[in-house]
Structures are given as C-alpha cells and as structure tokens.
Length: 135
Image (cartoon, rainbow, N blue to C red):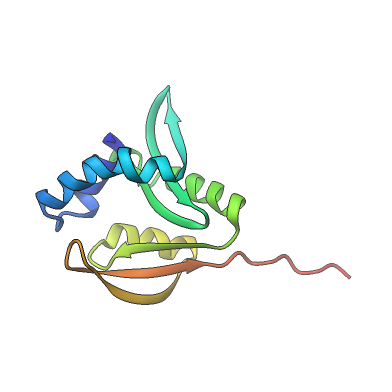
C-alpha cells in the first residue's frame, strides 16, 4: 500500500481525499484479491507492484525514490511476457504515467470520463511486435 500511496501523491495530486480514502479500502479488499499481482523488491522491501486482470494493467506503482531506475519497466516486461498485448487507463492529468506508458510503447485508443473522479482518462494499448519470420 505504501508504494501506491507514495507514488499516487506525486502522480495524482488532483485526486480528492474522499476518493483516496475509498481507494485505500478498495485496493486491498476489492482490487488486489481479483488481480494477479507481481511485486518488485529491494533488500526484502516491496518497492513497486503491478496488478493485472488478464491483459489489463489495473495498477502499476513504484516508490518515488526508485522511479526512473527500471523498476516500472521490469514490472511491465513481466506483464508483457505473460500476456503479450496489454491495455491500461491513465488519468489525462498524470504526466508521469503518460510519459512512462508512451516510452514503453503504448498507443492511444480513446479518451473517456472517469465517473468516480470527474476526470478524463486515456485508454492505451500496447501491441507486442511479432518477430520477423526467418527465411
């Protein structure tokens, strides 16, 4: 939860305390029990995680002090290894997440209204490139 809390503070400063309080309950009690979750550790401490519901990236969060060190890429590589093509939603107002997904190769699919927050989210898709056939 601390990976989510700390990373969310810098990526989602626009979220209300009421919404965050609801998420503090939903993450361990609703979302994670229904997702396949992989964690990244450093010296036995969880420093990030990715939660997958099939090929949907439900969440990926990395402790701020480890962002930019390849942890997010390693987690996303695991998801891509498991599922190939991936989809994710990211808040339009989250430049950190948008930059990460863009650099990983996600492409824009659509923009829509996120009812619980009143904010806009972007739906993105990563398509695994097939290796060229050898002749």
